[in-house]
Length: 226
Image (cartoon, rainbow, N blue to C red):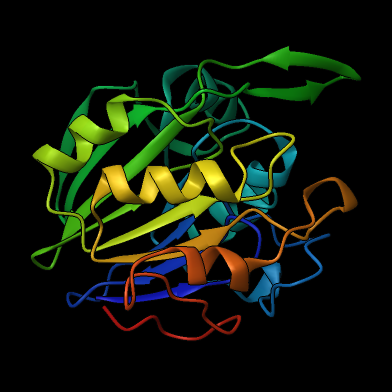
């Protein structure tokens, strides 16, 4: 499994069987990513929630690749109305795909998209766990700290977790340190910071607050060792 961080909440995954996956493909307008939306080749798109800085270029990428979008039922229904292939899920649910298992977890956050000029709620926000190639990665999504993270860490053997640190809209560095402790992931990468003025943070300080060897601050587009 090859995993790279592409800025904001964008994560790409290449599996041993050749399956290509992208989480939350906010490419156009993302000041950090090196990806070009019209060049991305994927089989599956995993969306944590409906906000524009996560749905991003999903429609164009999915149509061009004939990719399947995996997200909550409500957001999946909306995207299906746009002609996309979708698989709807809900927090607590898991599904075994040909490439591995996807499971959704709660995230304390909103989930809406502007449709015809009106902000429209499309289900719940989620975190998404991917189990494939004998590894477990957990994209926590946009969320506040919540105590069930400790239970998740006790039940799951998480090799790599992506946690938001931006504050204002999600948990900040202090809460993210506690979340990382509770999740007990072998490796933790911060995300969802510095994209906008309201979420400016120092990721190096977050890394230093974690136990030695746990935090990792990758270059954009760098394969993450885990």
